[in-house]
Amino acid sequence: MAVYVDNECIAWKGREWCHLVADTLVELHNFAQQLGLRRTWFQDQASYPHYDVTTAVRARALGMGAERADRVQLMVCCRKLKAELNRSSLRAG
Image 1 (cartoon, rainbow, N blue to C red):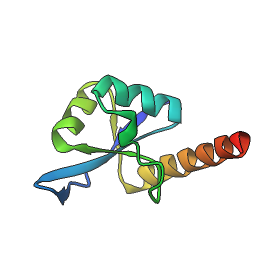
Image 2 (tube, rainbow, N blue to C red):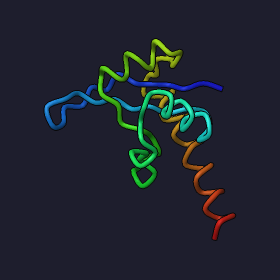
Image 3 (spheres, rainbow, N blue to C red):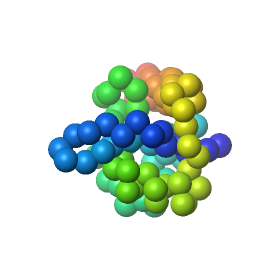
Image 4 (tube, one colour):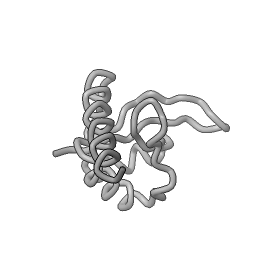
């Protein structure tokens, strides 16, 4: 299991933003909490589940053991997370 961060560097509101994903939702939320991210910042309604992080937070995440992800790796994780969210929605509904 691993946590990944890309180097997308999307400019928005005066900062550059990247995406934080993981192999599982539990791992993603635990890592995000260690980074000081709020659970409400989780992008579960986006095209793919992720946390947006600034480049400064990206650097901290890498220092804490997150792996650099290219677009392919990011999409592999996002598909897994989306499927996990869908399964949990079916169980809850």
